[in-house]
Length: 477
Image 1: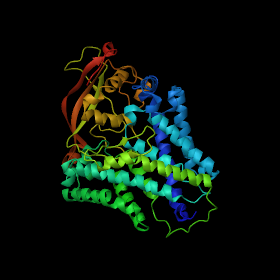
Image 2 (image 1 turned 90 degrees about the vertical axis):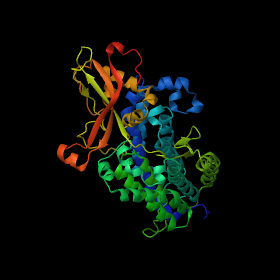
Image 3 (image 1 turned 120 degrees about the vertical axis):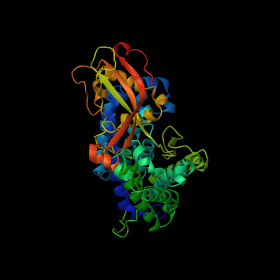
Image 4 (image 1 turned 45 degrees about the horizontal axis):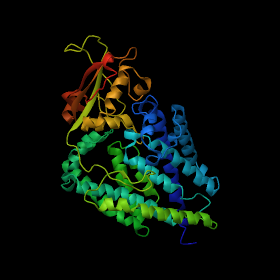
């Protein structure tokens, strides 16, 4: 079946599979290290309470049959170990059926986590990892030639990621059409990185050039993915360069890295490698690949309709298995950066003007103005990301922000492990509060004089001080 196989793509498939397994490692480790405070039995949004309210068909997960913190940890760490083995080549050292089973187990384990992850897992890169991971099940291993149909499906996924992001920008905030969005975005993006301030300080003409290049890469280049080589490979290479630029300018978990992984599957490696010789393709495997291709084609109807709609939605899953999704980000750009700063005091007297407050520092999000924004992507700091959304819309955080503060009043160990440090290591604070600040990057002169990366101005008190005596009552921003 010569039409079925693309033996010349063996190297790009190999690199793509190993890199995808690496992304799985990061995702599973992120889940293992953060779940107790967020989703555990005593977490802010416990899985047991969620599965009692949401039926299995709406959110398929192994945890519908049984949940315990120990089981969740076993799922996450087992997924990380299996992904590490696949990244090291284990899936190429076993028969085809066993290789497919490995990839299927990775997909099933991560699906089980995402579908009970609630607000902490409501990001486009979760669905993107699941969709890419599902296709990887059928990509074959070292004993089979790369199947053309699955390679096309990977390009179709990459097309939707890039083109969807381009459309949502063009249809959304007018600053994208005016080429001015990057006057603000590097400063107001969810999680700035070590170089974000430098990107923000670039001349305006370079910001406009960045936006124009983004439009070309996301609205025009994706169509070249379906042209013959070397055109398709060149288009993929341009996408890789664009994504590396985004990696340097901010922290977007594994979104950019996973997009690069998808682009690797379309690179033209024939100039540096020769096609490998493979045996015949098993009939059962060919039938399965054809069936999956037909399934993806059918499920693509709603994502395509969304792409063509003037009311295009971002990062939407149309089925509970996250098989074919729609993607996009930053249809609107925030002009002003707000941050929620959490403070506590060990003063047992009711808070007043003389009360001394100590600030809780987060691992990634801006807090201390003298601290340079850290690099943590592709790792995903889920609490930090949600704090950015809470600052944009405090009302949307009512379901979890108050519960988070209550845990600080108890010096809850799993919750404190999500933070950079605990200003109250011996005894819990007597009171906590939340303040809303406006942040901006310092100018060159301010940075030289003060050593600060940020300048901040108090906007208002978001959550008034409350103590342990109020810890059983609701706390609303």
